[in-house]
Every structure is written in C-alpha cells, then in structure tokens.
Image 1 (cartoon, helix red, strand yellow):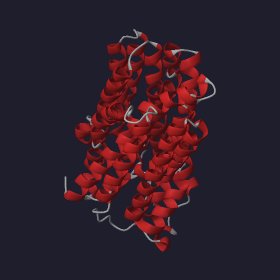
Image 2 (image 1 turned 180 degrees about the vertical axis):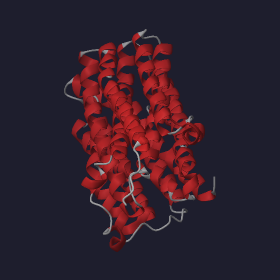
Image 3 (image 1 turned 30 degrees about the horizontal axis):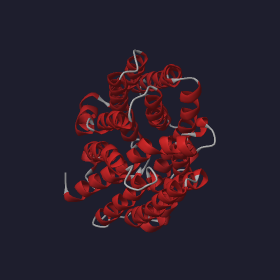
Length: 395
C-alpha cells in the first residue's frame, strides 16, 4: 500500500458512499413520487443506465485527457447531478429525480474505473492486491453510506432532500483527494492505434467469461439489493433495519477484498469465482427461509461476499485479455455490459418485488446463476484442453 494507492482507496470509499446512499433511498423516494408502484426503482435504473450510456464517452475522455482530469470531471458532474436530485426531492418531481440520476451515471462510469487505475499505480506483480485494496475502500461506503442516509433523510422538511445534498459534500472531498494522485499517463492515440479492434479482443474465451462473471454477478446482486429496502418495507421492517442490512451487505462486498487478492494468487481466478457463485446460491437459500431481519441480513451478506469473489475475479481475469494499448477499450467494454445488465435488473427489481414478491424474485436468479456456472466450467475445460494440446514442430 503506497500513498497514491491509499488516496485512491479513499476515493473508492467515497464513491461507494454515493452508491450506497442512492441504493438506500432512491427506491423509497421513487415509491413516494412515482405514478405507479412498479416504477419505484426507476431512479436507480436511471443511475446505472446513465453509467452504461457513459462508458464509451468516459473511455474517450480518459484517452484524451488522462485518468486524473477525467476523474475530476466525473466528480464535478456527480456534484451537479446529486444537487439536481436534491432539488427534485424538494419539489417532489419524479421526472427531475430520474433526470438527475441519469446524469449521475457519468460519475458512476468514471468511479468504476478506479479499480483498473489501481493496477497502474503498482508493479505488475502486485496488480491483484492493488485491485483488492482499492475495492476494499468500499468498506467506507458500507459503514458510512447507510448511516449518512439515516442521519440526513429528515434533515430538511422534504424527506431525503438532505441525503442527496450530503452527497455533494462527499464528492467534493473525493475531488480534493483524486487531485493529489499523480496517475501514470495512458497510451497516446498513436500507441492505441496499434491495438486490436474490440471485436477481436471480445472473441477470446477469457474476455467472454470475465465479462460474463462481472455482468451476471453484478446483475444478480443489483436485482436483490435494489429490491431489499422495498421488500423490507413490505414486511413492516423500519428504515433503520433496511439501513443495517445494506450496511452488512456492503461490508460483505468489500471486507473480503483484504484477502481476495491473496486467494486468487494462491488458488487461481476460476476457483475463487466458483466459490462466489456458490455463495450467491446460498443467498437465495437463506432468503427463501424467512423474512425476519436476520434472514434479510444473512442473505444480503452472503450475496455481498459472492459478488466480491465474482467481480474481483472477473476484473483480474480481464487483465489477461488485453495489451497495454488496448486497456481503455477492453475496460470500457466490460463496464458497458456490467451497467447494461444492472440497468435491466434495476428496472426489473421494482416490478418483480411489487408484483411477484421477494421469494419469486430470488428463485428467478437461479437461471442466470446456472448459466454463469456453465460458463465457468466451459472456460476451465477450454484451458485444460489448451494446456494438454501437444506441441507440434515442423521438420
């Protein structure tokens, strides 16, 4: 852990604070303001959809102006977007709230690249640990985010207006910190011109499985996490209980990052991703066993740890799929599919939990989890076949 990596870890923590507060309140504010209950999670959907729409733009900006300048612009944009969300909550305007969360997606797309920037601040041999350490910064968001939402939700007469305004301050602090980090320069336009086109990069089995693990793992996690505050409200749990469950969920997402890098080094990427998949299945089993506070907490904690293994494993696996001059293209492509999957699951979440119920939603996640399991087995088989292939020499 060097100084620059520590600062980036703090930035990641503040970025996740923004995300956790959004998760904690967007569905509830949407439920208050939306014309129909099934549209409750639309503000959260708009946030991840804005991230998906911004991935290509962010990649271009990072190539053009560098990591630091792009991260700074993302934070300034995030401050403006969360201020608009606060105004929307104050005016009780559902349309403005959705617009604000869409615009905040540019900050989401920028902040999601902190994990890749971490690998550039250390020697290649330490990249797994660097990615783990920066993701571990999410612990700050896990502890600070739910408590910040609880403390500021009634700060002003209109509920949750104060929570959105607090995120302006959070982004301002992150802006100061990211300005202190001397990021290494990205490849120039001339250097990136020599890279392979995305369609060639994306045909590699390692790229396909890395993206599938990150996207499906994030999608399932987002589907259940976005619905949790609404499901708990339906079960007559107070907001403080939902904040506690989200706190433990986010701790489950990021505390393992202290050792996930070591586990990947020791056991390999695919075994750790397989454990993550099994933890997701365990989450479903726990959720189906009851609707008490501890059932929600246990299920969401297991979901968080499973996400960590899948997402960190997928991120690490992706670094094997591209050359240095191709990094922004490959990283942007991964995040595009992650955000696109999150957009679908965020939108589906509100409709599923308010119409089908919490149990049916959990059962529905078994299909994508099964597909992901098949994909991991396929890559393991492909690698064994490649390793066992005899080497032929010409005469």
